[in-house]
Amino acid sequence: MQRYFGRIVEKQVILDESDQYHLVKVMRAKVGEQVEVVCEGKLFLAAVASVKPLKITTIAQIKENNELKNDVVLIASLLKGDKLDLVLQKATELGVEEIVLLQSERSIAKIRNLDKDFKLERFNRIVKEAAEQSKRTRLPLLYRIIKMDQLPEIDADVKLMAYEGEQGATSSFLSAIKSVKSGQRIAVLIGPEGGFSVDEVNEAKEYGYQTVSLGKRILRAETASFYALSVLAAHLERK
Ligand code: SAM
Figure 1 (cartoon, rainbow, N blue to C red):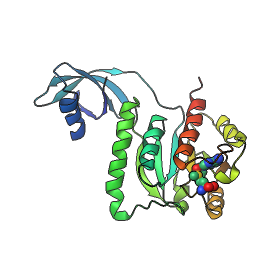
Figure 2: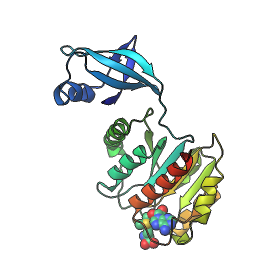
Figure 3: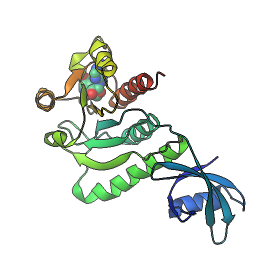
């Protein structure tokens, strides 16, 4: 069943234009067709009451929680081309609560201020589609593009920096994850194609970040995000 993120006002479902188009033109919805709608973290079963004009009314709230037990924020360095699109999509599927974009020293991709709103809008569309596809009951936040010296603005109890210079055993990564307590927010910081500079590592450490290894091989930045978030999600959902 198709899931949308929308608003609900007195049992009437309000979808954004692209979702309305998708439901009517792509899904060719008929009167009576049922859809799932997420509004403010709550999931509802709804039905199409009319197609022209489109009217959708809620039937019942559904108890479901597909979210991770702990909030996870991915701090992802900007990447070239569609690699960042993939990171946004997979991070959303893997349950992050927020994605923060980092303009790091060696980020090849740059987002200038005049592009920021346009790019963030496109990035949020990717996140929304991934959240609908993966049956999330919460849309990850994505509104910040920061520089290293703004790291302290990111609220987190456990701060992990995947650093290629730590190549080797993953014990520090795994023990950091295993010591996560209920209610703690976990930040995972991933570098760009060119990696982190020593200055960036020292700066992150000053902000309380612990450098961890993701194994003996050098992973592409996008792979490193998938790897770190997969291990983290698997642990948080082990029971
Ligand atoms: N240019 C760097 C080099 O050749 O050493 C590699 C950077 S890697 C492509 C991009 C990012 O992925 C790194 O900054 C780090 O955050 C993460 N990463 C990749 N492999 C890793 C590993 N084995 N351990 C920890 N982090 C890793």
